[in-house]
Every structure is written in structure tokens, then in C-alpha cells.
Length: 174
Image 1 (tube, helix red, strand yellow):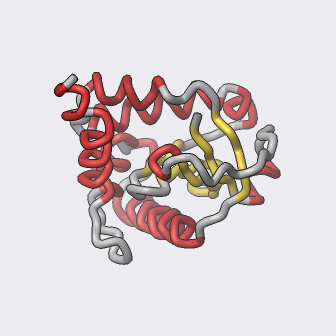
Image 2 (cartoon, helix red, strand yellow):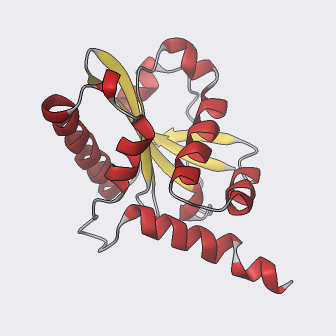
């Protein structure tokens, strides 16, 4: 199971049912999400609490929220593959997502990271490349290469390292 902590704004536009936040879940299985407008469309940003690895879903509509679990998992897999994470490790992580629980946001630091990524994306889209001409996976890769100064990490490297430590070498021993 994973938990996605949603902003009030996201709860208002989605069909998500708010549940109690479970503090016992490993931070690697906790995410934060928010909705924002860009290019006259609703877009969703999702960021991992532990690694600050994230991705943006562009052009989100009401019907997407009905299939959110599927869309989230498919987007996560696509973005992790693009980062070079091994399929076996991705499969092990995704196999843990038997249920997605939605809760209120609870970490101001993660929210700050989401705001930073949205601002970077707005600059890129507004000044350099319209969404219609953009490879969204490449944009997500570029966003994940930007350092999170507060944690002294690069989200893409830290996510790969964390997944490898969690699912990789230990499984090879047994």
C-alpha cells in the first residue's frame, strides 16, 4: 500500500476519499500530490516524500480521477524506466501498490518541493517549449535532475539508489 497526501484543492476536484494518514508506512511508499493550472489545463504533480522524485501528469480531466490508480502506476513505471531503473526493481516496488490511500498533506517540506518543480515547469513551458511540442517524460527527467538543496540530493539519483538498496542487492543474496 502507498499513501498519497493530497492538497485541499486536489480533494475538491477529484473523487478521492480522504483516509487517516498511517505514520507506520515507510517514507518510500508515501507521496504528495497537488493540482495546478498551466496552458489552460489542469495538471497534477506527484512527489515521493523520501526521495523527492516526482512527475507531472498534463491535461488531467475529471474522468482521469476514476482511473487514478492505473494512471499513477503506469506513469510511475514509464518515468522510472526512462531514468534507467531496472524492470525487476520497478516490478517489486509496484507489486507493493495493492491499495492507494489518500490523506491530507502533512509535510511542508515536500509541499515546498512540489511548488519548486511547478515553478520550474512553468518557466520551461512559458519561455522555452510549449506543452504540445514537449516530451513530458523528458521534462520529468530534467525536473528530477534539479537538486533539492534542503536535502542535498538529486531526486533521480536518490530514487534509483533508494530503490536499489530496498529491492536490489539484498534480493541477490537470498
